[in-house]
Length: 255
Image 1 (cartoon, rainbow, N blue to C red):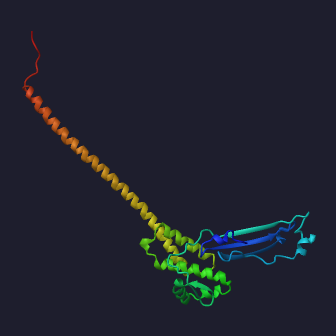
Image 2: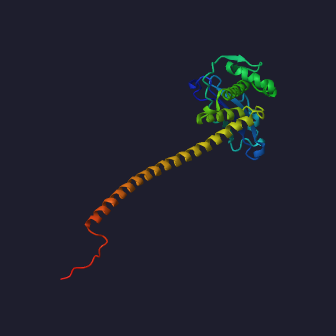
Image 3: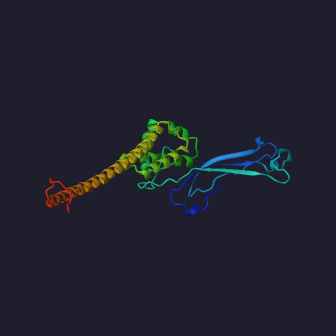
């Protein structure tokens, strides 16, 4: 498999992919021939695949049912992780050796050494992987650890949560034993949910405060109208009493 336009990719670009090729047995699907692999592609390492698949003689063997009526069927499946990892601002690009496993960003080395001492299986399991795979895996782990180490809760906005989500999904593809880290990361995502609930509650409070202000303004206007109405009533009563004796009988005119 080959990365299209690899020369245009930015420095530090990576993409994990799992892919397979299948030569279909057209009479017995279970007898189909499949090869699969996984790889972390880089801007400067942009192709990966199989040097050989199966002997051509086996393909032409009609008893194998790979070739029927001069037709063979080849299936390809590709699974690519979603999202790209944004390079952190403080990455220097200076790479140092990490326990003989590969070159790692200098800024991440102290963090990786710290967790290595607490969780030695991180190293043992990755020793069975290719050098490129290990370098990308520990670089991603370093980015996640650095993010957690340097990000304050109060500064964790929507973009921060998105960054953490992408880093975590990226890290999971490298098949580390993350049982020690997962509860903490999930608790951070829980804070996101709590923050979302608090944001909605804050919106509700703002709505109610604005409604109270509106009603207070209406009440103040009504009180002004009431005072004016009282004044009008007093003037009307005074004018009415000036007309005559309000205690006298109304009577009626006589010829």
